[in-house]
Length: 511
Ligand code: NOJ
Image 1 (cartoon, rainbow, N blue to C red):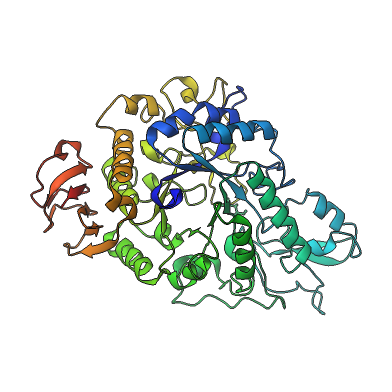
Image 2: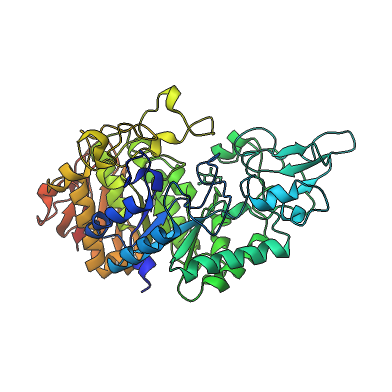
């Protein structure tokens, strides 16, 4: 079985993992210093949020150079050393690729701005105003306001699905496609095991730039919030040509994981192509945005089981740098709930992606108004704060007096304290990962829903492993039997299971 199917992946926000040079900002040498933690935890691969040079209008998601490393994070040599040091510990490294847009400081865009005849003009999406002088169409930026900004020099508008400082690339251009083939190869040659692909669903736009239709009452609440169905500004079928092309570059052994921000499973499955010719994994945002509620999550998992192409592989995650930490969003800061959520994530059929700090049940950190850095109004800084390694000043993250984003309550939750405590969340996560590795049922076996009372969720993995979760405030009795391999309440480990599950507890059974 391939490493990424059997394994656990771990997302690192490089500015916030570990600061090796005392400037209050995490960096790649900091990641190297902490690889032992990841090896000890048992993860098989890491995905690093953007590492390329960027003016940081959107914290790395505005790339100014696709073949280099942001100086604040280190050098290309540091990245190469990180890849080889991770490799020595059996850990692969995925980078974040941002193909939908560049920074407005990228040399291509700077050239494109010189006029309609510029060498790189066609790398971006330009449109004339409508005859009445209004915007080319009704497309809205995901970050608010119109998706078009006027370039006064030429009188044309350029498209940006995000900030005006993030002009969208023109994926109808064969030259753009070739540029990115080269960028993928550049990093593969340096030992990168694959990419998480930003805004993967949206890179190709409607060739005729037709208006998006308005959202309707039956649409997912997120779509209703946006106000529009993104059927022309995003989600075009032609994206699959690009994904097949990238897959050909990635095969036989590099992987592509897409940020596939669609809110219907029927729209998610096509990102896997026929099963093995597009993405290896397509992030499931329906799952992320569901509540921690069996009645919501179970049908999503059942839908994936029923609808995913046979050769494809699910992926589940609870936290990321946009959606926030599941400990806050799903669990409201309640550790018992966080434990059940972790047991679920690590025992479903599919690859779990943990976000740094999930393993110690780190919650989102409240950000005072004068420390806000995120350009997005609702603010994503709270889930991007420094990792909490120890209870010392600087949380073991930095020697600096201050950090780029505020530290959370490292006294309450940190790696060092939890490592010393066999009953901690961290010990639970490590032990479940170890169980998952040693037990083929858990990393490779099939999924089958078992009957369970309301509020609970039970499933069989493979032939001989059962998971029972109580995602409710009341005790339930589940009709499953076996010996407890691991329980969120560690006192139950190795005991025979009597069917009773107190509120917000879960067990994995040999049965
Ligand atoms: C998705 C990224 O995850 C998010 O952080 C970013 O702001 C947008 N794409 C734009 O690149």
